[in-house]
Length: 178
Image (cartoon, rainbow, N blue to C red; front, side, top):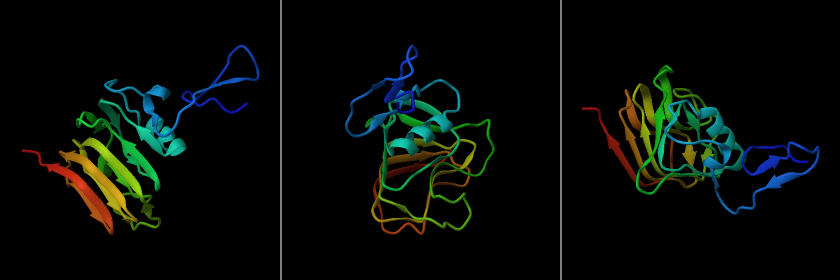
């Protein structure tokens, strides 16, 4: 009788009770919820909903158009290890005071009121074309980890850590528009 979430719980259409439940352990793959790369459409709402529900997601190879995905504490976002998972800013949306990936519960440019703790972001390329920031991390503490993050083409800064101590950066690449 649980609600259908279109990924791990599927309601049968022919009966009132009964559900198909996916048995899994660990991270959920966003493809299970119908989120596929290279569609050319903004998938922020769908990605954020899955991420908020499960806090441990895998985003496969390809380009996903988004407009500011907000990072949660005690969570994980993992992309393809070959650097082929790209979160790309939706250029149809105003990118002023926005970030492709915002590791802050407060909007960009405001004082953070809530800490982000123990978030893990790994193997993600952030294409911030048309946006002020690639990764904006404000008030991240308690071993938040960034591993193999590449941020590109932001209009102000590609990676911005503010009051982010101790944040562990295992590998971050920053490229500037030429």
